[in-house]
Length: 230
Image (cartoon, rainbow, N blue to C red; front, side):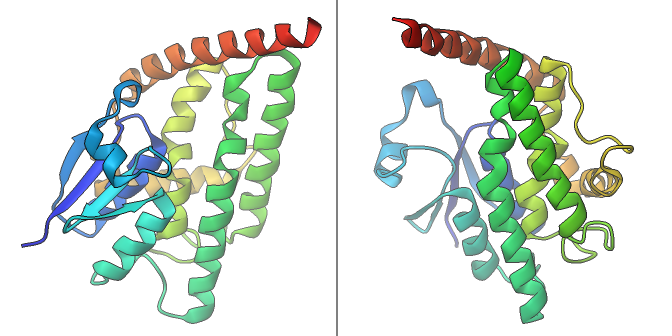
């Protein structure tokens, strides 16, 4: 009997990547909800370096960092594959997974600021979306690198949910049919998949959560701002 645990946070787009991968592969797991303000000793024991979620624990062995976990899940339960068999296509999907993962924090920077800083950050978000729209091949196939869902799609999946909640809070919309037609249809394809659809946090709750988060970020940004003047 395999023992699989996921330490996660319901609102975390990084946790969602791991949950989606396990659900797509039909792997049964125990979900342990973490409270980041009050981290459990188990989490600290399993992820002493980053002390953050998600952490996958497989038969007592911990794996941290969402994209590393996704590759581990792919290799451990290969029956339903999230990577193409063809080496070139496979490296393409891995390239985009890495690109998207590295850009994720840049893409949500707009959420931490208002005014001019927010404008600049929003331009950065659009710039990254433009690259994905034009270069990832998302216009040619249903998904990134193929017609079945894969690792790069799971990396980008947060734009179909978390980003939408953030947009609602800020009052902005990035992925429209006009601005990014390919990504716009990709979001539709992504959300049609039952394992994804059934494992999205409730939108209203997410909006509420991120509304509070934003208040906190803006308060922090203002505080940081005052320091420059003294």
